[in-house]
Length: 197
Image (cartoon, rainbow, N blue to C red; front, top):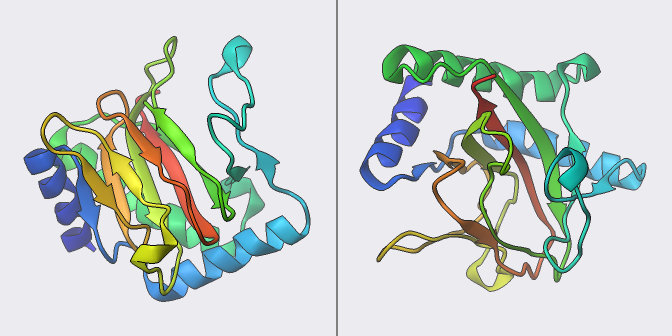
C-alpha cells in the first residue's frame, strides 16, 4: 500500500502531479462503478455546480457531469473500503510530508457522451480549505478514441491523462488549472479533496 502512496507523492514532488496507475484494485473499481450506475438508475445523481454558498451555480456551459456525495454514514461496504484507503493515505501524507490534512470530501462523478468540464481551479475564491485534489477513475477498457482525458495546464508542460480504471491523480487544488475534455463514452470517477479544516 505504501508503494502506491509513495508513487503519488514522488510524482507530485517531481512534476506537481502524482499519478498511481493501480491505486485502486480492479475489483474495488468494479464495485464502485456498479454503485454509481445503480445510483444513476435510481435517479439519485444531481447535476454538478460550480462555486460555493452564495456563489454556487449550475451551468451546462461550464460542466455537464452529474454527481453523488459519498458519506461514511451510508455504510456501503465498497465505499468504506475506498475511505479506508484514503484514511491510510492521509495518515501517511501527514506523517511523511507534514501536510496537516484533517478531513476530506469525495463524490462520484458521471460524464455521459458529449459531457465536459471547462478549465478551472479546484479551490474556492473565498475558502482555502481544499488543499489537494484526488481523482480515482473507474473506467475499464478505456481507449484513446474515447476522449474524456484530464488536461492539466502547466508552464511548458501541459499533461493529458487518460481516465483508465484504477488510476489515481493527486495535485494541489489551488495551483493547477485543469479541464475534462469532451468524452465519447460514459466516464466514471470518484473525485474529491483533502482538506486542512
